[in-house]
Length: 532
Figure 1 (cartoon, rainbow, N blue to C red):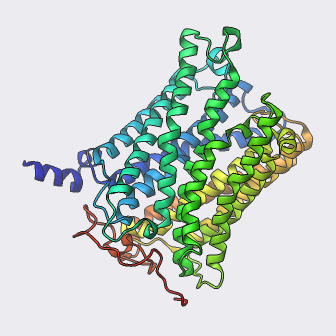
Figure 2 (cartoon, rainbow, N blue to C red):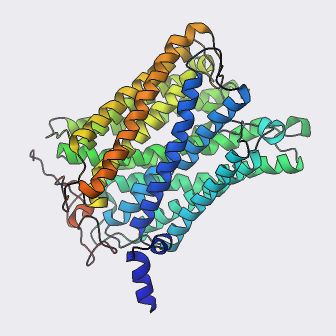
Figure 3 (cartoon, one colour):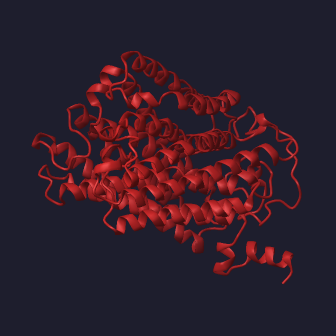
């Protein structure tokens, strides 16, 4: 077999080996899709177990130690193994080269290596779970994690550390691909906003992920060798850990939400048949979020003992970082104004995203206020706010993007009625789950406890009922999307009559995407000024 034949077999063959050795960015995206879905199911199972425990105030289903492990594993799996990689590694990997007119990523072998690194990190996490789990919370706060926790901290920390390299390599690959492989005529301000969003998120991946990776390794080293980095009994400083951890982990929120915002721009432009209002402002706001996101980590530490003046600075910066996010929402709404809106499944998800993300963003402004933050710190108000951004925002956008590009990925359409139904069920289930948590948190119920005063039970029952509906809503697409692979209507190259290079090629795309090098001659989202 010649080298050319071997390359053709690896990228086009149907055997298992061809998938595990493929350098085709689209196949690698599908590998991420399968594994991320499995991690999502596992993290969701822990969430359901948590809600079942909180159905009654007595904490009678599991012991405190087991409950601690449940919410820790839920957080670690969802944050590091689903929310961070979901949109970039699945949709970004599949679409970004096609959107800019490239045949593949700049570094195809590095792209495949990032998936194997992701899987290796997941394997360490599974081993830790099989050996009894970890009970530190997903934030690994010291000195408990570095000295006193009697659980599998080191193995879990290694899993998170290894997975960080997957993010770094993916971000690096995206940056180089966008800079060097754009088609002729694809200037910076002709790029789809999906690409702009991934560019900004990639900057955070490359610059921020090494910080948390080093921090987690320091926790493991202190635990192994008692070095005295974070444990005050050994001469260390636990507040130092918080500074290092949140310096990455607040920008990590934007690693998750920026690609989701990029998806929203594509959906809103397509299903309102208009160019995004203020395109250049929306593109620039992605970079503004990436830069400002590195300056606000201290708002997680208002009760840690930092000075009042530092708290005031971080409070002001936290209000400031909300401005570019607000620009996006206002510009999306302006795009919808007098647009020719088509209520297809992806657009239903887009409307759900706007509603849920707006609630999450506005409650984030509450937390930027020192006085309010001190009152609701470490309560279920924080849990609700975080989930409105991460679950209500990121997963709504992820599912909207999956439904939008599913015909391109598979060449098949899904049943539209079921798609709309699942989007509505998810929206209702989500609000029933997390709106009561704002109330119970404001009333003083602390998070991470599996027992609580009886007067909070009715709100927790509502939340658990909502989680059941939400779980059903997430399961429905799995069935009809898999069904569509065999029985769905053939999609054609452009079932939505959308703009963009990805809609000019067959569905699913050929191995090298384009027969020749495309040339871009018009602006992004050139739907014209009239209603389509």
